[in-house]
Image (cartoon, rainbow, N blue to C red; front, top):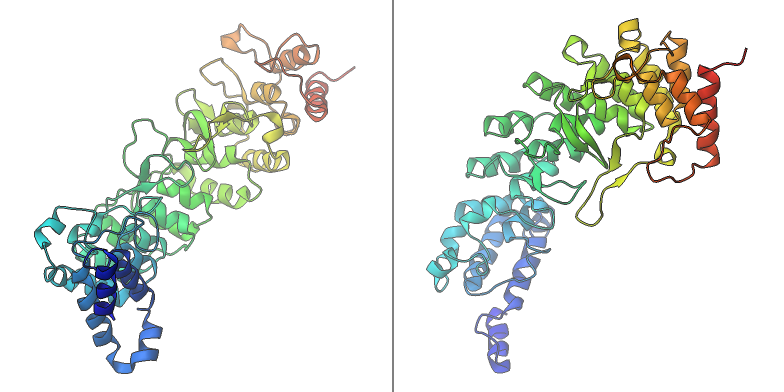
Length: 429
């Protein structure tokens, strides 16, 4: 069949080795190399049938490029085999692929090029696809320990990184990020990855924007994986500027990110974090000394939708908050953080308490919950020189204090919430 294709291509003026037709056949051979299909068609001789197929096809790609990649944009043959869980083929390529390729023409040229040749030993560390995952990261994503160990044993680096799926920008996600995001909640891959150099908290990030693997695991409810990360030295108070679809103006801890997400399913995550005991810091934003209560009360303040490779960052507004979830989060926090020092803690930028931030955010539920726990309404801001929370609420209600830098008028629901803040803090006699 191959000879017939080559003869046809010669008659048509194509290159000797059939161009995309050879690579197309090779790609189809990968698709057909599932263990079930091979046993179905070849019985106990399936391994020999697979090897003979690739021994014949691989050398014929030594001068042929696959501009669209194998099975997807910028994908190598090895990456395709890993992504399709073709364990037998992956093992064959790693053990024999380079030797088989040597039978092709101009093998020395193939070694110097990423464009021609279906397999090179360097492909094991080559980032592929739109997300720029290496074969190891792809195997981790599908939670395939046999494949992971095979790739590690053949020299793939556990320190490879892929694009962050939440931003689509810099390649800052490690194997542990990928594992946490995959949602498998199993720990068997953690030890081999760490033993081969995968950083437990991710790589140092100059901008401080990349979340840690532990935060990714927490946000995906991977509590078994969380425990494994922590037991291996993951920092419970690791700070970053971004996670998921949100970014902040200052580095924020894992607890702070969970609070600020205002997600409907946050309570289990909060309880897990709060149950870790003394290792969890009450301060969630060290730069300004914002506490967990400050972050919950602030809601949308100093938070924005994360910029991506396709969209610009955009500030959160009052209407972007799921207020029922925010109320549940604040209530959960107040079950643990309810002594006077915690309730009335003052942050260091403007001297605000959580009550001040609740007023500025129009967070009437937080105002009520804080009052019910005994938080003060009369603590002045700015080191004793500024307004109290009650004074702020009254000023906003009387439109003496702007809460919108752009001057836009708030909607009816926000107006009503801000009125309730004032009514709670300045009750009529």
